[in-house]
Length: 304
Ligand code: G1P
Image (cartoon, rainbow, N blue to C red):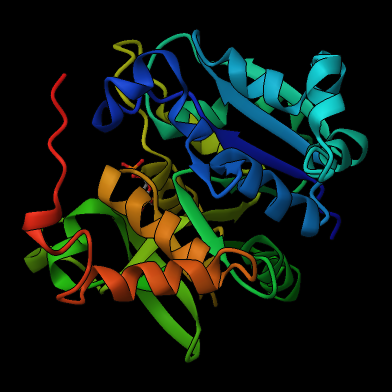
């Protein structure tokens, strides 16, 4: 089963990041020195997904500019003594990017549906740039392995606490195959915790059969209301397509909110060999009574 394409929906406004997201796409929020969407593109490339179909919107041109090495100002190249541009050079050389604008905010299902002309009768991946998953084996490649084994669609899931259930798609289990692999009966988008079929939440990585487009086609309405990907996956299951959920191994950060981004920045700095030791020292210092940050007497007033 050849899987070479990934759809990266990046059209959303990011209201929780306003005013930052007024002019800068929130997918450009950095984790260390790379924008979050580059982390997702690198995960895809490591998973041998060389065709990246990015769903964008007006005002998101910076995303395409970021991956375009022909647009680099020669002065920037000259100053890159540490060779930090090499990571984008690699992506530009090895991956093929297609950009499709989503003209109206009609939901994740609609964003994926827009990629239909780029995808033949084949399995393809979807990666949401709000979810960053750091792991030894890239999350997308974990899903691809399961999709090949089961010859079916697979969704990445992780356990979430009850209070977070209403923020996610939650899967209903038909059969437990292994402690990490489940065949699904249905998926519910952002349920009330008391109605949730499990505590396993969809975490922004999917490998889907191209049959999802039949479901999305059938679900389009003339009223043009939001189209959920979750509902289309359910529709596909009702039409006898098997769908699995796999508990992906890795550390996941939810960049959908500023707090999630703060955790991701700190978490990735702690894991980084260059930044880790100094970040650990800084965090220990914050909690110490002698700390500059902790001791109110040492606070310098900034008058604007
Ligand atoms: C989307 C999906 C949801 C999934 C979540 C993961 O929701 O619709 O099923 O659990 O991403 O981050 P969103 O966060 O875009 O509202």
